[in-house]
Image: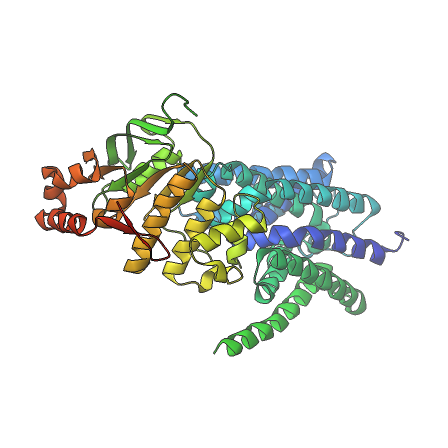
Length: 267
Length: 248
């Protein structure tokens, strides 16, 4: 049944939605959406390296994104520039370098649109394995660091004082972010992965009063976005990434109605 | 834990420097099982910094900290819950430890906020929030409690009651408490040892000794010292939370 490209894309999208929900919640809670963007933009460089060295794409993206995260931490320590300027610097320069390198690699035919915005036709069987095995690993690790990560998201000092290890949890979480970008790039594309992380989560925030609910709604929102997005991508021949994100946006707008209701009830 | 003398944490001539400026310097103190040590001092005198040094929150400190327990409950001075994170009181209670419903209920009842269990943390008043913070810190039955201005925003009667509760907790759990307060007279009845800070240890001893100390008077003014003695004179009894009066 995986011979049909559409089924493959759908199975890939479902896997990604399950992982993006919980990770996206932490991205929103910890205000990391621009950080996610930076990692995602650097992924393009990872893709070009993978092509020119004939290396596994997901592994290459994962390594480059992790390296960019490390460089960011070093720059934060050694310069006086604010974090958002450093993030902008890394995001755009790695995207630019990636595109320049693609320009040099004339012997390989690149589908740049596909890299930037996702390509429903690009998902092969090996990608499905990468997504589901990688995704399961990401969720497992997230489960293990949940307590210290969540506690330090609420209050760093409190978590540290009571014997949890917030710095380690934060470092591991950064690696998990790099990992989800690596596995979802083919379907969603470099420019829109952060949208997959934060838009269903933003919708979930409007519907939930506790963290567990928010994670569950974020997953449901992601799944719905994938279904609606991929079907319309097939129907209207639009790129898969933007279609999924546009579907997520529609869901978010609907969730605003609920917020409005709650506010009216309060008054 | 150090068995011979019941010491839970011991600071030996500690100090902490940030941006070439000493926040606090030359502080030595120790917290023992079942004892309450109170840090007082004006704003910016290094009370919170000293507590954070004791908790091991800073790297690069001067001096030594010896900690003999890892079971610690902490009430920070400031904590802000971001709107993006939906959190009810019950979720907050489980922040650093996995507790059973019964344990959570017991702690929330002790601080008088069991009715808020399903409320969102963002909708609590300042006083309610402090009570929840305190409940969370005591729920895991810690050996060492560090309370940084635990009653801020609580009304005066509530304040006295909470200090009574803190005293009760230290006896019941036999835990050591490092308490930070900006005014000595409300914590008077609930403390064993007072350390008065002003960037360094200005004076220390029993509450009575500190109140009489000239350095304390110089720091807080003659009036503060007198208010204290009046207060002390008036109250030769304590009120338990249900209104009973106990003679000291």
